[in-house]
Image (cartoon, rainbow, N blue to C red):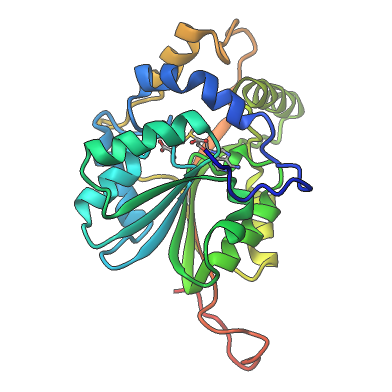
Length: 280
Ligand SMILES: C[S@@+](CC[C@H](N)C(=O)[O-])C[C@H]1O[C@@H](n2cnc3c(N)ncnc32)[C@H](O)[C@@H]1O
């Protein structure tokens, strides 16, 4: 399959990610099922319904699912919002093939299309100013050049379109030792999963520098009795020895989960300098 959006002269800031998922997707499917997200509810469909609300998905929209896995989430969205049009992309050939099969199995070929492509170059894959949403569902943190990915996102969004990021971010502590441990453990996760766990400040700053309006930043709102408590991710780590926690001595929980919704201004602030973009 041809890989879109990865010009020869450009080195992908996701080097190693495709190989990682080509090698591990069957393992993820075995434990996670078709939704490869650690933060979820016991019934993962409830979490996807929550995602639809949080990302403000509606019939008639044209959206991109950037880092789509095997299109488990995209198929669910399409089945629940039949007038939604979804362009899904993944950097893994193995996932793209499995996603194609999933789209047929779930009968959503009229709504979901999958492309093998690198989300840092969405603007080379898709038309400019064409999308209402770009979603990153636990995929943004794979990027080692997040500002570059946001440049591409801004180009493909329509004026007034929004980027939705749900991801893990490094925790912070005022205690020097604890912060050191957080950084070390994040480093181990990054190595095991080909990740680059985001720094919330830097991601928010990159969004604002690029002119996005932050609509909200929040912890996913999940009832504790419905929360899955990351047991699937622990099971995955123990079963396959990927990112396994060898010792709980001196362990510090290293991450927080956040959702960010940010909007591309509906008009060009350089042309209408007198208008202030109010955060709705
Ligand atoms: C943890 S999985 C989440 C998959 C999916 N969002 C879900 O909820 O099932 C991370 C996904 O990001 C994709 N990904 C990582 N870096 C990427 C890149 N540069 N371009 C496109 N996809 C990427 C991986 O291929 C994988 O599908």
